[in-house]
Image (cartoon, rainbow, N blue to C red; front, side, top):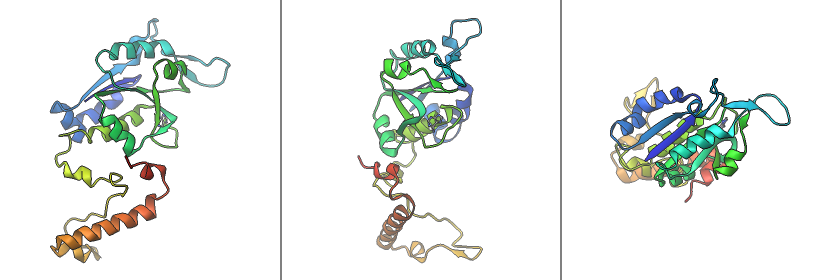
Length: 229
Ligand code: ADE
């Protein structure tokens, strides 16, 4: 699968691309992430990609031309959807991650400043996606969140594919509590059932705990409920 990312700060993505599961997937050829510096698509001497807002008001708006040109250059090699990362977009959920993991590629356009000229959304038939109801300084961190969540759903990216079946939200339940050695630490004990070796009891306990956690912590959140698909 291929991600194309359009950003004024492509360097921000280096840590994601060089570490952990995503780094390994790229090194192993399972995933490709192409970074495009929006300034490369500006034509003036100062490589300006933003301008003042029509109608006045504070802050600068990302100009449409460099973004259209960047996406025009990407499109022949990446036929997948174009996504703008914006705080008012549709919520990024596990269901949307699964949907995107079924695409051959995704183009992510990172907003900055006060926003992106709205003709980008309209003209590129782009989808707007938000990673949560808070405002970040740009779409780069949200784009990394999307890449990470989608990449791990691709075949071969996770070492143990069965861990996907146990993922939080996959079966409308979040994960059950996990423990590792030691069996007792500062007076805190691992639940007896997990030491019993009785796999049926362990499974039953895990189901019950996952249900309890779901009810207590995420029931009512849209992202938990829309995990169904
Ligand atoms: N840009 C700024 N804040 C954002 C958010 N919460 N989600 C997506 N893009 C953003």
